[in-house]
Length: 631
Image (cartoon, rainbow, N blue to C red; front, side):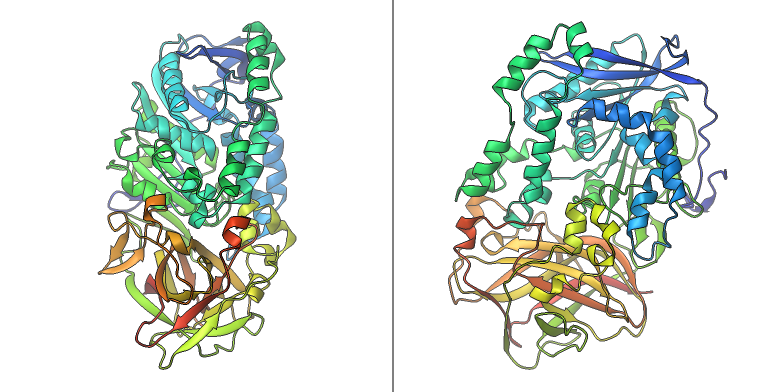
């Protein structure tokens, strides 16, 4: 194991290893019957894992405590944790790729990184003198009450749990929060409340705004949300009987489950099916469920992925944190929601996830000067085989703002698409109308990989790194082969001058790296419903006076009408990325009227759509704005 090496002023190398010391305790002790009372009478059920010399008896004394809130039933964490060592061995048996592109075997290789440990109970932590508490959020798992994701009452629960932990004899007063996905968002929420004793956060694949990013992406429902809610609801009917009986909660559990058997699913159906439903737009009720990033005082590590369901917000969360001196870190890998940390722990890669988390908590809960605060603070793996890059900020300060114009000239690279057009340094010399096709969407696409959280990548390139089948029902705009390497860094904006045949239109945009053999590897994406095109200037991002990240309000009061046959401008937010496109490759923007299975247009929206057209006008050009640099 190498020690942190100084790679510059206040920076250690990406492949540095941090000394977490040897295991101090040979075994762990599990108490699966912990009940935590809330102020309104609800009781949250939790698993408490503590260091031990013998399984039947926890070690004496108090320890720093790591808390993980989950809606997925802590039984899953418990049993998956028992398989962590086996999963790690299996992951090592499957060799990862060279990571020029993420492929299916990288997903299978993921358990070798310590990802299973941090999802369940990180034994690397417990064996080194931490206690671990996994808590079923109210109305899930074995906890009583009714589930209402990230509601103000659930926010209060988080704080009350931290307050309760701080008073327990096995807590030394130092507490951290962690989690994956929902648990990561919960960790950021509680950090924003600043409870006493909270010293650090380690958030994995979290989102700044789950409703904006996943529930109503671009202003339309995501089918995967219903699947997710069904999974959570199913999990709450698999209790831990021993804990319920020992804590006298069986009656309350049965009463609450029968009184609220399908939490949120009915409301979700009404939002999707009802025209003008107030919760089909962003509103104050959704806003009060979000983390208060500006109020977070605890050192915070954010770990994300370019093709995660929350890939929009890693750097927005990082920028909103008012922390300095290495107290905030963001690390973004080329992968998916279920492939966190694939390849970590191998040479020239970040440390294994369980060790990285341990080093972060060692620094901020135990006060060990291990150098981890000199990491990054921005660490990204460049897509396209560009390797790991660490620097103080994002986007790359060497990147300058560029424009590429949409033209109707054939690029000669996309005969498979519905319409092959071009991206050019100059605006089109003549006008043209390009109808965006409709038709049956293909399941084989990067969108399918994203919504399956990476699972479909095992089916081959067409489900991850070659989007040509999805482009068959889209208009593609492609550059000429690049004369030199091009580095993309940051968010993008696609400004379109368009026309709708009805009173609504939906735009799905994908940005890809086209390889010399024609494969179209997805880098990033965006989407927007035309009536929700109003931009909030205050929250949008400009570079050198150019709009590169339009923040759409997505609120009912900002709806803009779409008049059939009347052209209008629309700015489409494209999620941030960092990638290197090699000389001889091409950059492509694909525009479609839908994407499967990422978005679903309910009947009341579909009836309003009657064709949509990109209007190429030399006097009113359409263009892609991005930050780029020569490689």
